[in-house]
Image (tube, rainbow, N blue to C red; front, top):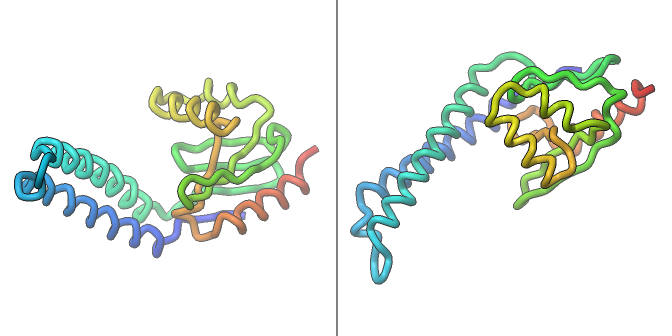
Amino acid sequence: MEIYTSRKKNIFLLFLSLLFLAAGIYFVLHGEEIAVGKRSPLLVQGIGIAAIAFALLALFFTIKNLLNKRWVLRANPEGLYLRIRNELFIPWQEITGFEVFEVRGSKSVLIMLKDPQAYIAKEKSPFLRKMMQWNLRLCGTSVSISSSTMQISHKELLALLIEYWNKYKK
């Protein structure tokens, strides 16, 4: 089984990122006009700068996803391969189960691991290592998958993962 990114979902995210970028630029350029009453123009412009930074980051990842023609998740009898951040292999025997985690309507599939710290230790990027540690504290595992940019819903993803795990765990 191989799952790829969804072109439709990424084009929608590209559109949202561009809207966010435009709003941020508007806030920076028209901060004094927007700041009515007790609001500081600098606060409005600061929010605009933060929106621009967030939008540019989102644009980078969305464009990267649009140009990526490779799979983002692959499951076979050996285990689960994730190519979300970088390529990560998790043998089925290392997985203890799956859970769903929801934040403001956005659902992620949590991959519950026997030794989540081992996967954190394997990560070379300090930023991603910190994100995995944060994920471990918040969700109880260091690895999660969001289907928001995949060609599959979170329910279908969860069902497929459970099916493969039940079939190949030993």
